[in-house]
Length: 87
Image: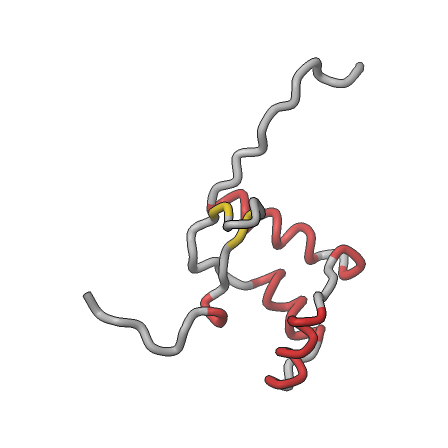
């Protein structure tokens, strides 16, 4: 069985994103923290174990989308601003 002749795009939707995050977070070696995240974790006194737990069990509150840099992005409820305007 060889490789497919064409690349099939990965359709990232909210359900696929949640499943992918939970799956990746099962193996902590697959999760890394960029310097900005490490800084914020120190400021907020958040441990890596807490982050892993959130990734494994948390919810996604922002729809999956491609950001300005061409990367997939979403947010958990804890990342959302504390105040929201009611429209």
